[in-house]
Image 1 (spheres, helix red, strand yellow):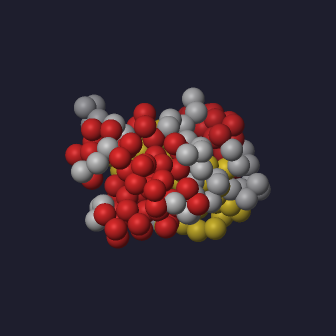
Image 2 (cartoon, rainbow, N blue to C red; image 1 turned 120 degrees about the horizontal axis):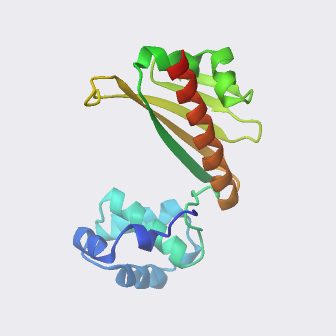
Length: 189
């Protein structure tokens, strides 16, 4: 499933309610100002500075404009790269899941790659540098216990600096499989 276009994620009514104008009106103003030749930051600053659009909404309108004018593909970051993410809930305490992220031998057992560790914040996150130059953040979030009283942890992966939308799909598939393996190992241990 490829990334969805901005117009399918944020309704025109929401933009109008938050900014006072709809997509067509903003895009016409941006065209008249020559924004098709501007970078992302300049467009967002212009919306905020010239039209007092809130920062979050200025970013949102900017992304929609860039996609509508062919300056950015859905899911594309300002630097031209793409991100993929995946999440898995593991029924175990953080203290049992954390070593599988932090310790190289345990991490290699479920991740099956040897990426360079670039940082960690115990017991919350691990950051890795992949062989292709992409970057990975593994994040643990303790969740309220389930109805059965068992502890739960959300394992979230953010994999950035991917080359194209095809890499996003391939990477999501990779992470879903890896996170299933992580859950199996934690539950078996």
